[in-house]
Length: 155
Image (cartoon, rainbow, N blue to C red; front, side, top):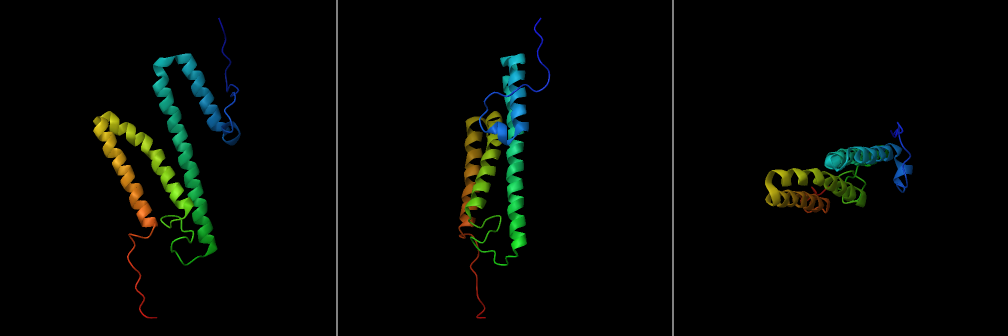
């Protein structure tokens, strides 16, 4: 009988991910070993579990980056919150737009799966129409098109 080694197995050539997040690399290695041991019957469940872990990791990184941006803005003491001043949301900077789009696409994966399972192609189309709508509204707001005009009182 062949004895399988216990504990984390060495991860082979996962590119730069192994150096950036060893916990995620270990999780991938464990998932691949489990897939090999359990066979293709559990492939979907194993893939879903790993993707959930990956999604949580991405969400944590995005939240950490946004928190750091907010802290930096708070420490700078800026009073002007107009477009391009470094405000964390809706200011039109590349970082704010990129962060919002990244989060919306990460959340789009499970939302799409839920929509397809429950309503088929129609549900998927409605889901993506909502995602596109939210992103369009955010980009319109970031461009200042939805903000009320400023009225100076002659001062």
